[in-house]
Amino acid sequence: MTLDNQVDDVEALREKLAELEAELLRRKENQRTGEQRFLSLADAAPGQWHWAEELRADMVCTIRDIGARVGDAALADGDIDLARWAAGRALVAAPGDEILMRLRLRTEHRAGNRPDVERIVLQLTRHARILGIDLDDETVRAIQEAIEGQPRARA
Image 1 (cartoon, rainbow, N blue to C red):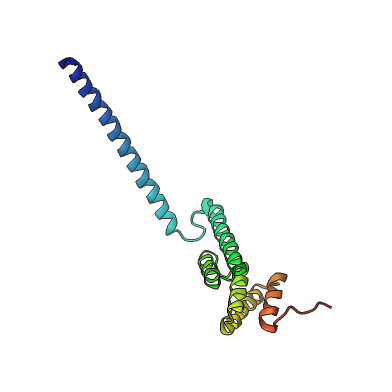
Image 2 (cartoon, rainbow, N blue to C red):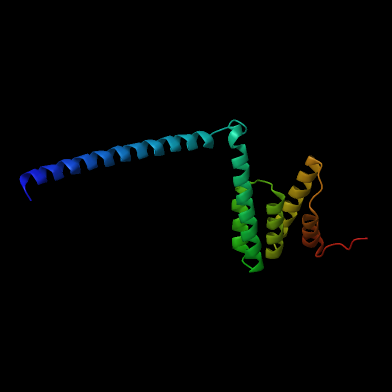
C-alpha cells in the first residue's frame, strides 16, 4: 500500500465517520422529539388530544381483554393470585369495567373472601344503578352464585 492509498483510505474513513455521526445525531433528535410527544400525551387532559382518543380507547380495551383472558385462564388453573393480579392490573387501565369486576368477583368468591365479594357486588350494583343500565347476564349469574351459592332458576 502506498502513502497515497493510505491517505485516500483515511479520508474515506473520515467521511464515513462524519456520515455515521450525522445519522446518530438525527436519530437522537428523532428520539427526543418522540419522547416529547409521548410526555405531552401522558399529561394531557381527557379530550385534549381528540385525535388520539381512538388509540387510547383501543389500548384500554386491549389491556382489559388481556387482563380478562389471563385472569380467566388463571382461575381455570386454580391460580387465585395470578387471577387477582391480572384483574387488578387491567382495572388500573379500565377502572370499574364490568368484565374485570366480574373476574374479581369470581376470584374472591373462589378464594372464599366474603367481605371482598360483598364489596364488589355492592360496587357493581351501585354503578349499574347510577348509570341506569342493566348488568350483563353473566355478571348477574356470577353475583347470584357468589351471594346465594348458585344461579337462580329462571321462571
